[in-house]
Amino acid sequence: MSDTPLIRSLRAAVAAVPGDVTLRLHLAEQLLVVGDTEGAAEQAAEALRHEPGSGAARDVLGRALGTPGERREVQRRAEPEPERAVELKREPKLNAAEAEREHQATPEAEPAAANSELWEEPNPMNAERVGEVVFDWAAAEEDLGFLDVEEGRITLKDVGGLKAVKERLEAAFLAPMRNPELRKLYGKGMRGGLMLYGPPGCGKTFIAKAVAGELGAKFIAVTLSDVLDMYIGQSERNLHEVFELARKNAPCVVFLDEVDALGQKRSQLRSSAMRGTVNQLLVELDDVRDSNEGVFVLAATNHPWDVDTALKRPGRFDRTLLVLPPDGEARQAILRYHLKDRHAQGIDIAKLAKRTDGYSGADLAHACDVAAEKALLDSVRTGRTRMIGAKDLEEALREVKPSTGAWFAAARNVAMFANEGGIYDDLLTYLKKHRLA
Image 1: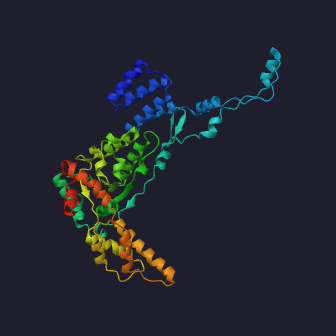
Image 2: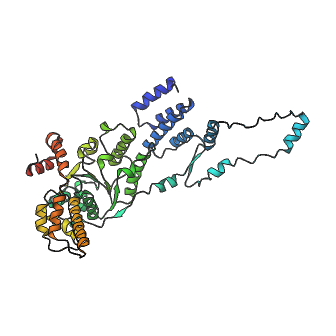
C-alpha cells in the first residue's frame, strides 16, 4: 500500500521523536485510512510500549486488529466455493402477490447472537471494550503471575569462604542499606544496582539470595524466558510488571540472571523487539515514573563485556563484583555439604580442597557424584555395599577437570586489552596472580 505525503511526513516525525505517543497514534490513524491495518497495529503496539495505560492506543490497536465479525467474514470470503455435484434448478419468478405472501411467511431472524457464543459480555470493572473487541486486562495481569516472590531465608553466613567477596558486598552494598540513619545523614537513597560476574558455576545466584536474606528482603529471580514474548510490546510489558511486582513487595531484591541475554549490547542486536526490551530495562532502572525505593537490583552474567554499556553507567549497574572460583575454605565447605548425606568415610577434606584449586562449585558437586557412582557400581559388582572412600574421589578428580579454563581464556583478552575505566582490575589481578596473563 502506497504512503500518502501526509503519512511520509508523519513517519519522518515519529522517527525523530519516537517517544511521542500522540504523534505515533496520528500516524496509525492515517494508516487505517489507507487500509494498512498491519502498519497501524505496529504503531499502536509501539505506543503501548511507551505508555502502557493509553486507552487511545488500545482503541487504535483494536480497530487495526478488526472485529470478530469482520475476521469471520474475511475467512468466509477466502474459503473456495464448494463444487456443486448437481446443477441447481432455476426457481420460477414470483408475482407481486406471491412475493408478499412469501415475505410474511418468513420468520424474523434472531437478533445477532453469533458474537454471544464467542465473546462473553465483559465485566465493566475488569475489562475494556476496544472497538468491537473485548480485552480483559485483569485476566491479562493474572496471566503475568509467572514469577515467585521468595522469602530471603539464607544469609552470607551460609556462603562458605569467599571472604573477599563478602567484604566487598558489605562495603559497597550492604552496610549503606542496613543503616537508615547514616543513609539519611549522607543523603544515600535506599536503591542500587550491583552486577555479579565471573565463570559459570561459582555461586552467583546463591550469593544474590544471601544478599536478600541479609537485607530481610523478598527475592524475585528473572530470566530471559520470563520476559521474552513473541508479540510486539509484550516483552516490555512483562519487564515492567516484574518491577511493579517488586515495588509492591518492597523491600525486594530483583535478580536478573544472565543479564547479558536480557541487556545485550544494542549495537549487536538485529531484532527491534530485543532493542525495545533493553530500552525498557533502562527505563525501569532509571525509575522515570515510579519509585524504586526499597527495590534492589542484582544481576549476574558470565559475559559482562556483552552487556550494553548504558546499563553499566553510574546510577544503573554502577558497581560490579567479581565472583571467582571458590577459595580453599569455600571448597572445603562445598565438599562437606555434598558428602555429608552420603555413605562416605576416610576422606581428607582439607587435602581434597588443596587438590581442587580452580574448580567451580558445580565441578566439585559433579566430582562427588562421580565418586558416588563408582562406589555404587563396585557394590553392584561385588554384591556388598561399601562406603565412598578417598580412592573414589581421587579417581573422580582424574575424570572431572575444572570447567573454568575456557572462561578465563576468553576473559583474559578483555581484561588486558579492553579494561575501560578499570572495570576489570580485580579480574586482571587474579589472572596475574595465577599466571594466566
